[in-house]
Image (cartoon, rainbow, N blue to C red):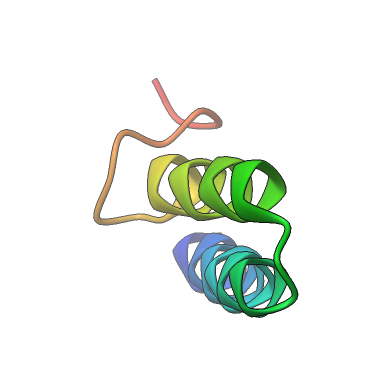
Length: 48
């Protein structure tokens, strides 16, 4: 499960960086923050 969360987090952060490059700053920041929250190194929303 941790591996799947890690993959999702990486995809979200990369999508956030791409959004920032495309001048969608707010969407990019939100995607990066969500990616950091979902990742196993962060505060995971799915494990308690």
